[in-house]
Image 1 (tube, rainbow, N blue to C red):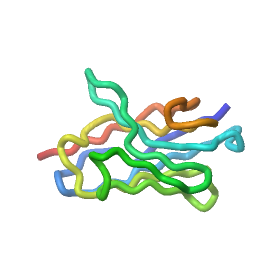
Image 2: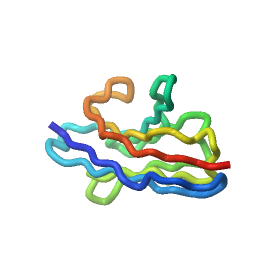
Image 3: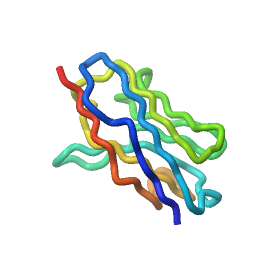
Image 4: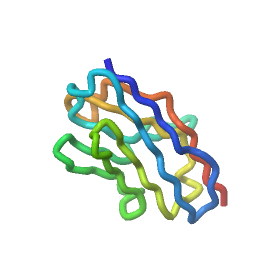
Length: 118
């Protein structure tokens, strides 16, 4: 089992920045991919950014050039630096981890709310 705990959400004005953090614990040796997803009421959860064990990254088109995913030196941390935030970035952001690929994440955090005011 893997436990994921997110932090760093909050309220920010449009154009501002936030940094989300996710700490993984437990059987982290089984993790090959980690990612940040977001969901707004009435919509499906979507992949925002992901990173593989080898360091390859993937981003949603809507956040390319504004968001950056990275891992900590200990590899059990993953971060999402969000710059130039827009009101449409408002959502609950979830950290996720998996053994295979971004479409089949095995573990999820409880989520952290990001609200961007206009």
